Image (cartoon, rainbow, N blue to C red; front, side, top):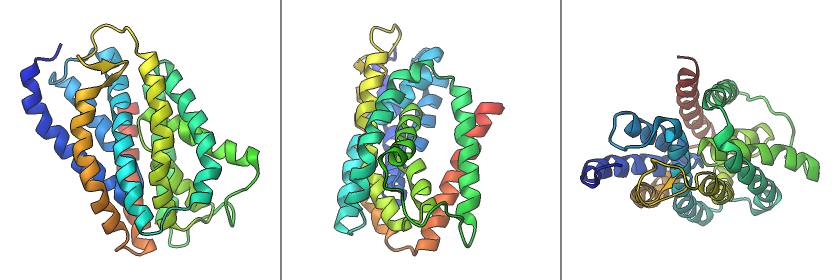
Length: 275
């Protein structure tokens, strides 16, 4: 188990990570997991967090998911004040995201992390190429309204996001822009999607990690509560800053900012999968 005194060294790192993740959450509508998961995993690799290697990635993903709840609340409140959340879009996709996230959380323990990272990286880089295009390619003039189409789009976003420990924005923002949704409203709405992914995903990880040996003290399944609480302090405080920055950028600059973020994430995931 981790020596309790190590938290004095770990806490400042987690607070800094939370500040970065919170700012990104507000700016881009993401949950911050793209930053949080790699850092938590790295802390296990260097021995600062004593988690067995065979469950380290699941610990990192599950703990990241718990931080998405306060982060999404803070970010969504700030976006709502700016009028950038589309509640109709939220209501039409949210139920399917919940179903997908619950399934993703339950089956995460059986998913090959290398394959998951590789698929994410490839999809991310394809999306980046489109977002960098001055006249981005779109699949439709508006999001589809039929129930099967909404389910086919939203459920996989929920499942994949839950398995990766990320908020829905990393996948839902580029998906919505492919469907001709305005980028500022896509980012704002995605901040609320984070809650729909985090809650059922947390349930799945909590159930899947029951009675496993070697997990940190004060863990519920794969989720470590102290790490999540420390990170959440600064994600909650810094998410509104990201929202302010987002609304100072025009649509083109916001798309570029998201493309840079997603490109870095995609390259990192591909390097983990193939190097």
